[in-house]
Image: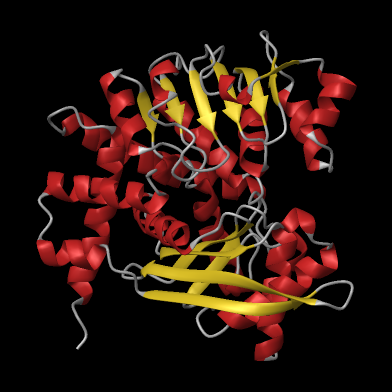
Length: 419
């Protein structure tokens, strides 16, 4: 039986809990879920018929602040996956020291098979199901796989209509015209670049490094473009339909801009790219310095980890590495920069957007990027220092989990148990 993402996340937690000697009562508290909403709801299709969809919203731990996490629309969404992602969000927020707890949500649906009107109907109905538990002081959703700024605009509008006034702080990742933050669209990719820059600061930097990026959605396309702009040679890029290789460097910026305007990677390559089409699996085993898994979870496994040639794995997706692959990377001395710090740029700038919404102010993109660099590099430096001071060959993931868990436990102890 294959390892589920929840299995992976719980195993990582228990390993970290063992290493820091976490008390049993805290161990039970940290693996409990504050709230789980599971709902089935009808959505009207364009032809007037109705289909029933299943959705979830999970709050893992809110000791450090309101619940925060994305909503994804995807056919493979499951309750266990959403619980795993909510737990990861708890540790992620703690590692970069933003005052949120972890949440996640999702609907089992293929958004590509729905019209714009059907997506709006689904979003508004799902928002109505979530209304009792979301809000700017309780749970602030954001975009994730299969959702975007437009979906967040519908969520905000639906919630605001139920209140009778506009509530911009109920979601983040909104369009800038509706109170979204400058810099939010590129935040996760930019945060990945900042973390890699800091990791390589004393080792020659990013310039000239060969990079392969798996996944070319909002995160993968942005990080590929930004790394290229910083002097990296992006030799491989891929999406769910095609994998491309160009030995002297794909024009990742041009490809990203083409895709951002609604084109596909396949169309870009036919019209402009002239890259070699390779097997999808070749991207993660490419002869490069850095691989960036930016698609879905569990793409680095016991089967392909022995063949990875890169010395650095920069986790852009949530949970892209199984526990078996992690052990192989440790044995092979391959550095994994874990998701809970590497891809925390999104939630960090979501925090900035929430602050701006609560204060009714607008920050410049320069300020957003400056604050993002400050917080995410501080988070990375904290886990790197903790790893260096540890014994027994601790990994960056070990150190990140220790810090995340310890900060949540500290907040739990300070608040106490009510009543």
